[in-house]
Image (cartoon, rainbow, N blue to C red; front, side):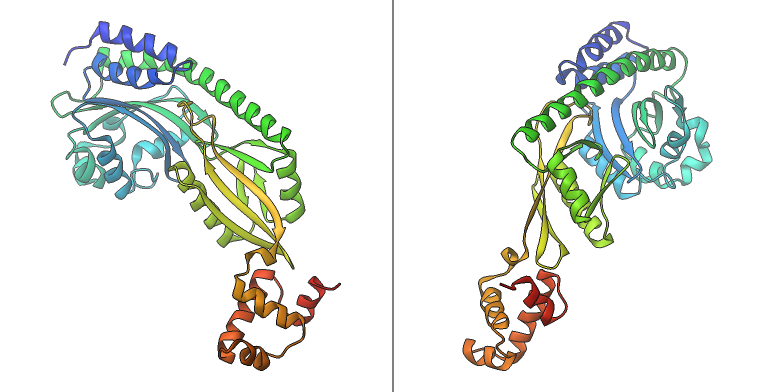
Length: 353
């Protein structure tokens, strides 16, 4: 398919405006595909967690959701499986990656990605250029080509390289706007003394209020590792990552962590709406609240706690409440766990006075 200079001009105009009006990213990607005579084009974000924080794809005859689903299902975001991702991890910005240079024809015939994704969707040929890199994370502009269109080469290849240089400038500007928006959000939260951490679409910390910094340092439950918000405990860290991922998908979440006897840190995750800033602006707000652990007890557990504090035995509590001793023992264990104590004397110390 021949290149289309008119479509290229529209793509260039759209990408120049995209940093100011997010709607133009889709237009730019759409006309890039037309300009290079390709089946589709896309703008994809890749990070080390084998996630795709950003995916803008344009092609009326291609189901991007199905493509991304099948791509993930066979490990498309995993460097060990995907040679394009693997090469991208060590490639500098503006370096062109071509499938036929990375994988032989015989290799593609045996490769799960081509067998189960690229060939069934008729996009066996790919050309990608990294337009932004931040450590191991990167943003890549790609064209996907059908069997009939063949590998990216000649004028179409030169066009993609020229377009990528233009896109790189717009991405840099979009990043500046996104980070400035995150700074303003953090300042607004500071004004109302909210303990919050703002995360970008890439999951990176882009804002921390003073109240949040104080809780992070004081409770020891969380840490900011580079630009990543992590929990110190492995199980809690997995819960936090799940909650953040859900917030990226539009759902709020919550978890609670005991950090000393009688105190817990409530961690809530909230999705943020707004224009597409290529994942650079704040997309998830993590709010922190230090609260008494007793607030996490059920009414029944509160009643048992009152008896325990009064020195009532397990057997007597069971008689008073009309339940079995085993039920009271189970409730007592849950109370100890929620209050982060292991001995009765520690429980009494929390409520001394």
